[in-house]
Every structure is written in C-alpha cells, then in structure tokens.
Image 1 (cartoon, rainbow, N blue to C red):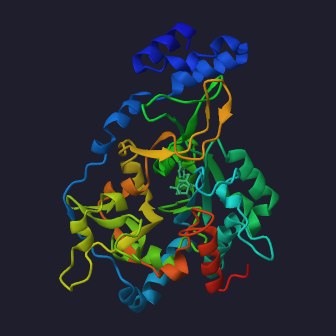
Image 2 (image 1 turned 135 degrees about the vertical axis):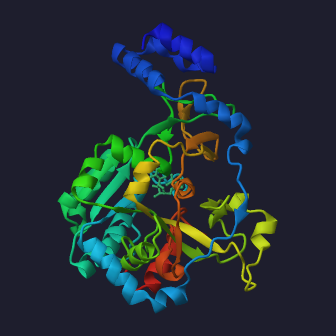
Image 3 (image 1 turned 45 degrees about the vertical axis):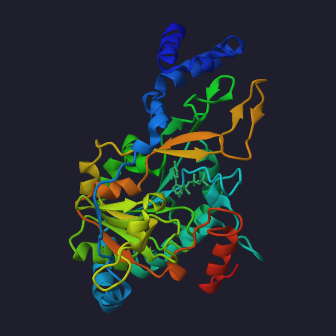
Length: 408
Ligand code: UTP
C-alpha cells in the first residue's frame, strides 16, 4: 500500500492520527506500518458505537443437560466408545493459548505461570499431565494443537520445547497462531503501541478453526483421520482433555458437538449458561441472563438455566468445515490496552482504557445442529485461573488442585 492509499483508507475511517509519527520512521518501519494499515479490518471499529445491538439474542428456552446420575449409570459404555474413537486416532485436542491473560498481570504467556509452592508446576504442565492420563488410559497418543498469538508465540514454543513438552510426544504437538485485531479507545480510534505500529490484540478464541486452516493444518487433520476436536482453555488446571466418557457420550447421543458444563454455584455466577436459542443450541453470557431467565424453573422445579459452560467443547470436524465461511458475532470487550500518549511515550494502563474486538468459541455452539451439555463435577474439573487472588484465581485453583491430590 502506498502512503497516499493509506491516507485515503485512514480518512475514510477517521484514523488519520495513525500517521502522526510517519516522518520520523525508518524506511523499513514505514513499510511495515503501511502494510499493517492495509491488513487491518477497520469496518468493525464502527460497531463500538452501537455495541449493545451486536449481541441481540433470539428466543431462549431450556436445553436439558446430561446430568451426573445418567453419566454414572452409563460410564462404562460411554468410556468404551470414547476410548475406541481415541485409539482410532479420531480425536484431536486444541489448546487455546492465544489470550493475553491481562487479569493475571504476568508478561509471560499464561501457561508459563508456576502454580507450584514447594516445586515448579506450570499451568502448561498441569494441562499436559491431564492429557497424559488419557494417553495412558487409551494407550494411544492424541494430537495436540496449540493456538498462540503473535504476542506470545515465540515464548510459548521456546518454553514448551525447553521443557520437552513435559513428557508429551513432540511430533504430536502442533502450533499455530491466531489472527490479530486492532485495539481502540472508547471512540473507536485505534491506539498506537509504537510510533510505527498499531496496537493490536488477539482476535478472540472464536477464530481457532479458521486459523488452523490458514496454518495449513487441516490437511493433517484429514490425513490423520481426526473427526473430533476437543477445544479447551489454557487456564483451567483441572481440565480433563479428550475425556473418553465425554467423547463417547457425545457420539452415543448422535450429537455433532458437546459442551462440558457445571452446575452454577449461585444464580449470579459469572459463567455463560447453555440453552436453546430459537430452537438451536446456544450459550447466554452471564450479563445477558435476565432476572426472569435466572429464576425460571423446569418441570421438576429445578432452575431451568443452571448449567454453566467451562470452555471445554467437542466439535465434529465435518460440522466445523461446514461453518468455516460463516461469520461469528463480534464481541467488543473493555480491556487495558498499552498505548502511546501525546508525548509519544508508552503507557501501560492500570485500568481499562478501550476496546478489543473479538469472536468467541462459545458462539460456534449456536452454529451447530446439536450439542450435548455434559455435566461434570466442578470440584474435580473446574479450576480456572483468571486473577492472582479471589474468585477464579491462582489461590482458588491451588486449593482445588490440592483437593484433587496434586502436590504443589
Ligand atoms: P479469556 O477470556 O480468559 O481471555 O480466555 P485472556 O485474554 O486469556 O485473559 P484476560 O481476559 O486478558 O485476563 C479464555 C481462553 O481463551 C484463550 C485464552 O488463552 C484462554 O485459554 N484465548 C482468548 C485465545 O486463545 N485467544 C484470544 O484471543 C482470547
């Protein structure tokens, strides 16, 4: 893109300030900045002015979860079915590790955080240990795909390589990077993070399958015969991955997707709940859950919307390919965004100062024809680390790890 083309584009979107330092840049930096301006989708930025309208929901009705008693009664059958699929190489695992982990406040990728007390025990290590349980049970390796972003790719690869993938087979670990999106102030003006660089952040965890495709990994998925993808978050250290019982139950119920869910611990707990939206599976975010829905009861008098998702989903690869071209809704999220101030100095804000533009994996559930909500015991499988202390924190996760016999 030439300078005059860049000016034209920026003028169209009211982003001319991005060239403020252009004349101070080296030739190489100028080129890089123009390329970034060309590649940046600026159409989405307008949306922050009517962000409330973006996430309009359809008619919400309950979706029954498969609950613990039913799972326990069928444990053997489901597990056998899941193990059969794993042994046949039909199940892959996708670790979503492209997030910035801003709430935790560490500069390193979240997976590099050490949760150990008397020894080193990293988040990545916990995740791999959990997956290794299944590898041992099935006596078969599961391909592990790791999504990173431009911001944390090198550090993640280096860390995992240096630690020999914590005992995982190196030829079964595949990295890919997700796309980035511009970050703006509250008026939709893109921040600069360097004089020749727009402020960007990973574009949310919803783009994982598109990014896998862009990285050329789908050929491998096909050649290996992978039919199911278990997608999960980096920050739940009790996460059960490629869980044979979950996989088997989803297959047995003829569903094309499954979602691990936990009973909410309070009506206002900040987790998305699984439901039907206009007759299709969906997830209502906690901030969209009206009083009426939160207090609704099913025919047994139990809360009708009481199963929260824990970012552990199983998707059929055929269905993922069917929806590849479909757009996901945009979520505009308030975050802390490092930026250059008027004096051209980098500021790392203490409080949110603008928006990031993201797609979320939970919206993929609404694009599925069917989804099995599969209940798990939260004390055994849900220890998210979002913050240093308090709710969903290093502290609470440590306590849960210890409760589950993990030595810290
Ligand atoms: P979170 O929603 O907790 O976001 O991610 P985050 O960026 O990690 O943390 P905060 O909000 O800045 O504190 C849930 C999961 O989705 C992944 C994260 O790595 C985590 O596993 N994720 C999130 C991505 O892979 N890419 C993204 O763009 C965002």
